[in-house]
Image 1 (cartoon, helix red, strand yellow):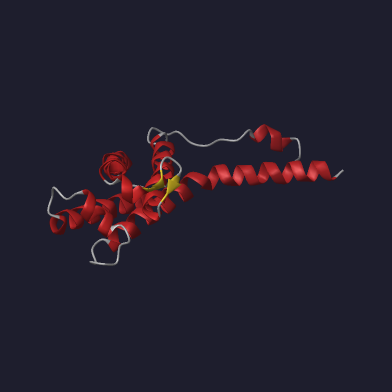
Image 2 (cartoon, rainbow, N blue to C red):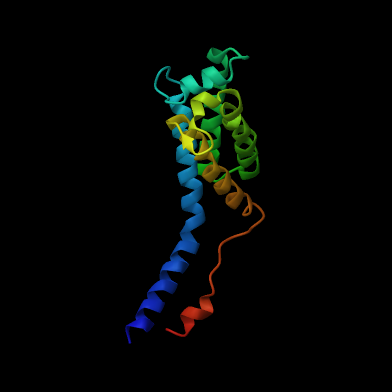
Length: 158
């Protein structure tokens, strides 16, 4: 008896997620990029500042960090606005390889015990896998791709 109501609720929730999931993902990812980028404009405020300074030692960090901050803020604005998505996602994917540099250039800062023990900086880097995956999902929508559900399932409950 209750199974029918649970199935209906499950279908309705799934349809709601399909309807709002991509927008939520895009805006949430945009907020992360905007926020993390904006912090880099204020010396000493970004927890990643020291990591960036030590990783990109071959470029003047006082010049590089504001460029990186601007880059990340632009990604954030593009994602939040949902405009210029191809360019925004290109900026995102061009920026991501740089976030992995500490793994190779500063392994002692990334690992407490290789290969599983991560420092806080290492966790900060590994979480970028989720950001890249979110970018891939959003990239699949630039030509009209979307999440869909089998609405025929719901019709049997109406």
